[in-house]
Length: 122
Image (cartoon, rainbow, N blue to C red; front, side):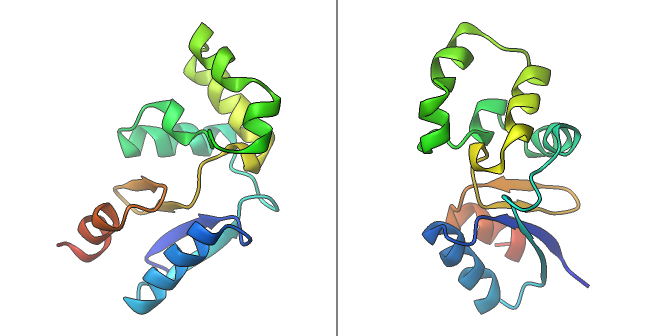
């Protein structure tokens, strides 16, 4: 049985490093391709609440689609969380990755020290 849900874009080098990190520590995970199976608005809302992070942290701000859609300006102008989750759910490429979803935590992006604390209890 998987310990966590690992949401990734397989071509992303950071996601590949994160997956190798999980494998090296023997952490079981369910793998999910963020493009083939984009998170829903309700999943994103639940994950954001569990993460304690602001909704903006879920946007892939360095992505091409984020820039093309001028989302920084839209977010700066003020959108509700509901609108933000709706935007994020339109395309998995808008979502920052990798995401690790555990029973009582959600990690967004690969920060080794955060992952170590959450997944290894250190």
